Length: 416
Image 1: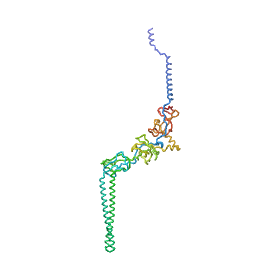
Image 2: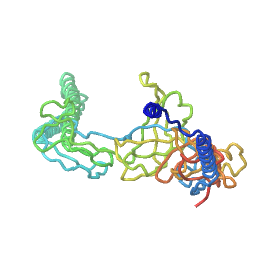
Image 3: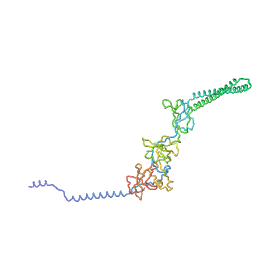
């Protein structure tokens, strides 16, 4: 009996005390509620805290090239020379002297090279001898003519006295007329010889190569001993010229403007040029002319841009970017032109880090009473001095500079 009771007791299942379950559940619920409350408190605490920022003030663009107005259009192109020449002789010949080097400045009519002139000098001496012969023949005819005139006058007197016949007088007249005709021929022969001397002298002068205008030598193309020919295509060992001279005062920029925006460009319009070699240097310029033809393949129109200042750093074939400016200036705005005033006020400048750029547009955060207002603006040119803002911001407005990821419209800020 006792053994069976013991066996049954071993088979009994022990159950936990159910009185502890409700209290443990309540503890977990309370902990979860407390965690939610703490999270909400931290969120609102962080949201209400001020974001530290620095302040940038929009100011009027002080660049002289921007004083004319705002940028209406940008285009890329290259610096070109309107006066550039490959200097060569007018005749074919062998080079004996080259008197130029790259980078050398030459004046107009300065000698840049010489060709072999031995054959030309020989031809010149020949025509000079021919001229002397023609002049001697003219002198001989003149002497004979004078004698024939005296003979005719004498026989004319003798005919009246019946000492010679009329036939003798007629023969004397014929001889006189023949010599007069021969004199004219001799005079024309002298004139032809003189023209031959002039031609030979010019050929001799053409062996001396001179600069057609003042400029800088950019290419030295020939060396002594080489053949130079103005009609050569540059093949073989024949050169087409002595060198290339560029008039640095004729440098300008040629850009291709999309035909969709060509209406924004006109002659004498102010512009600003930046060279790729000097991106921080803004050069005042102006529109010389719009070439009256379009490129069908590229749908562009070529525009010529002139420099208002000259500088030795500007070189041919440099890459350049041109900003076409409006004609609005602060002086016009001060005269009461409303549209001018708006445009002049719109052209302000900010540090680049104060603008969240998105292509031609951007976003700034304007400070008002400890908060920021998110504002869209239209951007202009950017350089080392800052970012130009064409519209959406006025002179004197304060802009927040900080972490754009934390800034939002209406966020509280703390100025540092």
